[in-house]
Amino acid sequence: MKYRVAIVGATGAVGQELLQVLAQRKFPIRSLRLLASERSAGKTLAFEGEQVSVETLRPDSFEGIDIAFFSAGGARSQQYAPLAVQAGAVVIDNSSAFRMHPDVPLVIPEINPDAVRGHRGVIANPNCSTIIMLMALEPLRRLARIRRIVVSTYQAASGAGAQAMQELLDATRAYLQGEPFEPRVLPHPYAFNLFSHNSAIGEDGYNEEERKMILETRKIWDDSAIAVSPTCVRVPVLRAHTESIVAELETRPPLATIVDAYRRFPGVALVDDVARNHFPMPLEATGRDEVLVGRIRYDAGTPNGVALLACGDQLRKGAALNAVQIAELL
Image (cartoon, rainbow, N blue to C red; front, side, top):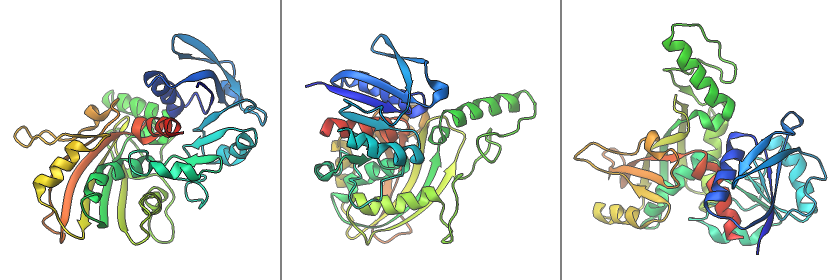
């Protein structure tokens, strides 16, 4: 069976990555409709050797569509996803609009694939930082319950979109040439700098990105008691997030058992060469489907703690690949 597919936000960084992933995984597509704002209408994007025209997103854009990938921000998802469902499409949404809705499955296919069975037309793609963290911890969780997670993220420009990626390139070029540069997309100078994640901070002291990691982890793992302590930081890397993670377990298995669990888990690649001091790096994670995991060790400061380093391509497993894998489950 082949499917009639639409991509909302086709000209954005995730939308273009979706096109690549669909082609690479040979997703069975009968027809493809690319949707974006009026300013992008008329552009063409390459797909499997052909040029496909971008259409303006409208309320009637989903007639005859089977699967609609949304990656154009929460506001457009809230406005247009219900219309797509009414037209008969299943929506796979990459925004935060529906993630915490009790009737919307929040799915990482390697972790909770059965959750898709309960969908009512919308399936949510988790936040990129959450996906990378939970992929890096799922092999451990299958050995023993995780009580608490302390995580620091080193997040790439791609998480803020194509314009942020371009700003990093432009700012770096200006810095190296000794020229002034005024940030336009992000709130602080980006070249050779890092800063707390550029999302709003709430009364509890956590920003939106950190709050997503807390709440989404509890939902995906169906564990309301798990404690998650994140600190999210934006770093001058183009498109792969890195995360330093400490997990406190109820019981701590032998280290050899833990390492073997990572070798066996689909979607994770073990990069843990102590002799060469070679561990997960953004450059090596870029373009890869797997989440790279290494620096696995017993944590010296946490009872039953295990520490590790994870790195994943934010545009692929953190967004487009996970969405296509959800479609494959359907």
